[in-house]
Image (cartoon, rainbow, N blue to C red; front, top):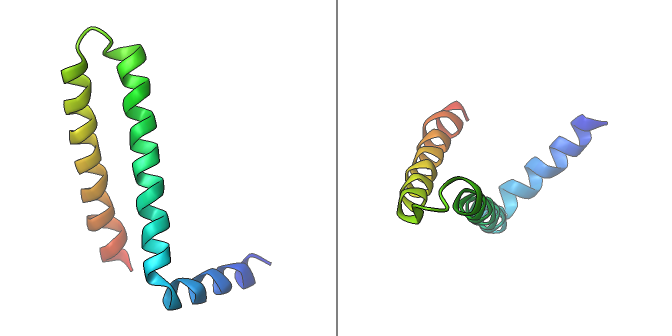
Amino acid sequence: MFGKLFDKVSTFADHHQAIIAAIVTLSVVCISWGIEKLMEKHIFYKHPLRGYLIAVIGGCLVLWLVQHYILHAI
């Protein structure tokens, strides 16, 4: 069951890489925006600059992890 689904998604991803890239980009932006707003409201409410810097560093770390582990594994 999951094998057929994985094959369909894999075939779709091979033919429509721009669409997959746009979906991944949109999801990463939405997740990082949400995490930044949560940190701003609950953790760094007195020091917003610290929250922004941690969000940027965390985003760079996630991009590095994606590039290093996922792209080299495929």
